[in-house]
Image 1: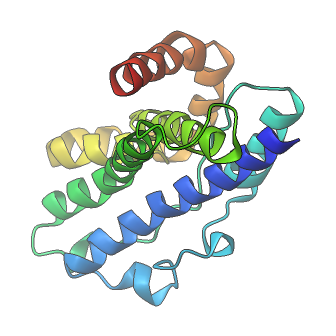
Image 2 (image 1 turned 180 degrees about the vertical axis):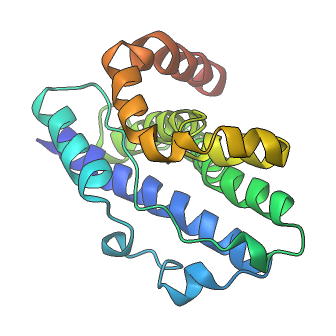
Image 3 (image 1 turned 180 degrees about the horizontal axis):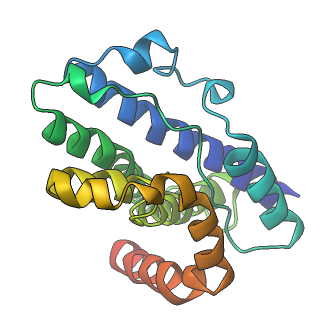
Length: 202
């Protein structure tokens, strides 16, 4: 039960930091949409998505998944408020995963001090923090809407290519579910997370 509670708390912390990072970068680049929508807050309730923040994590917990992952409500962004809309969207989209990877490094730095004995609550909390931060950072880099990888990809492509890929916005969620069903998580995300865990923790 303790590990489940830790996983839930860490998941909420990491996903909130992820969303606030999106909104803060957009705010600094001149777009007040996220701020005006109340999304520059650490209150998890402001960011919760019924499926990505509640249903999917609950299913993973019930099925004894070794890790929890999911997503929050997309932060509202108006690219026309940026001086350079494509650059603004690139930086705003990348801010979420970047925040997750930064958290992973911070959790690692405290974990490796060796202050907390193995198996203790803080030790487990920090280790879980590294794991979930990496999972969410890598997962969100997938180039499928509504994940951040699609925002990064679209901001790098010519407008003509983005127009041809507009259909992804309508079917992104279905595509994502199919990819997870056919084993994307086990075949790609888990190996990448394991690699970075090994790099960070040794």
